[in-house]
Image (cartoon, rainbow, N blue to C red; front, side, top):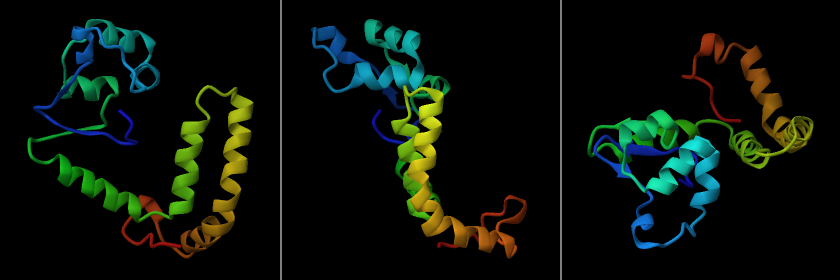
Length: 148
């Protein structure tokens, strides 16, 4: 649950199996799970300890991709390659803002986003805007976006 993007094989499953043995979730599960799937669904999984198959995991937000058996690593590597093509300071600022603004009031979260992204705008955004103005990335094209 701690990955930014989760990939599961179609035969995979999850569950709060420690429930059977009287072991509480001491790995952050009671904190992270409600943030991923909402309180009600999280409590269902925590309290019942039931098995959750990959298709349900995708439907409720426990994973983002379900792939055929034997293809999880391939998909994860494809995603890593795709993500690595983007300017990384910008990527890191956006991911940090998405994670750190959870639970903040809207105004504070928007201010946090703005302040946290200023360095990325200066380091990567200006040259990226120039490339776009020069024709790169038009009509949603990702082929020639290049790095900063």
